Length: 276
Image (cartoon, rainbow, N blue to C red; front, top):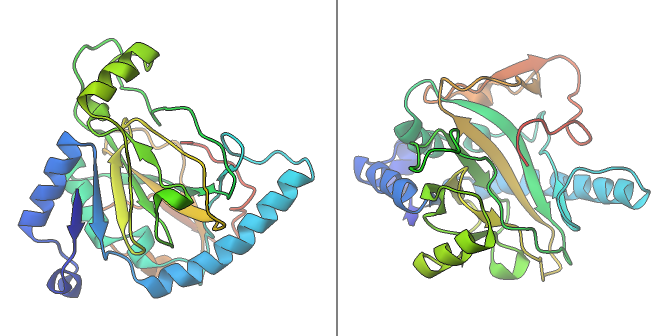
């Protein structure tokens, strides 16, 4: 489902009750929702320029034989910068995304991740996968949502530049992800390619089946990723950002789980601790 945020909602930075309810229903049934017109294009342009520079740095290191985080050729794990002037409130603390995730996860939710995936031209298919297994894998019924992934791209996402393949409703499917289960789900709800305009936010259940696909364009396609978790999850790490950007994290709907440090944060070649 796509929900277009109105000018009136943007003016007060609050979704209507109807839009929150629609988003909650989409997450429960299909496992994902797209919020249109949620992020300022000017902010995305500034961030995109630096991320392109960083991508070329990562690719050069890969080509020298250095180990670069990623899964399958052409798919890089790439963090956005963790310092000014590349931190923006409507990205790290987007009020519309936080309202949706809070409605699903409840009060006290926190962000456990600030990283991203980069799909390079000429990339390969990834295997179909979940980012996280059900908490109780032996149960024969799905448990309520505990973790939501918040994705933002600085450019339009299309099938041509490698939009992610997702399987609607698969977050409610239990069992090992083998060929028999995949083919059964295909007859129920076949996969789709998510398309999202610049300025959109994709929110998905972390259990949703998905895979990265080849980028057939000449564009480098970035996807910023945050992971909002229910309050009783263990915080495996604190997210570090350089001092000076504290005001960008103003949002009472979300625990940002951040630590501000004086020196620069090694974001580009640092570890990616939580999620692929």
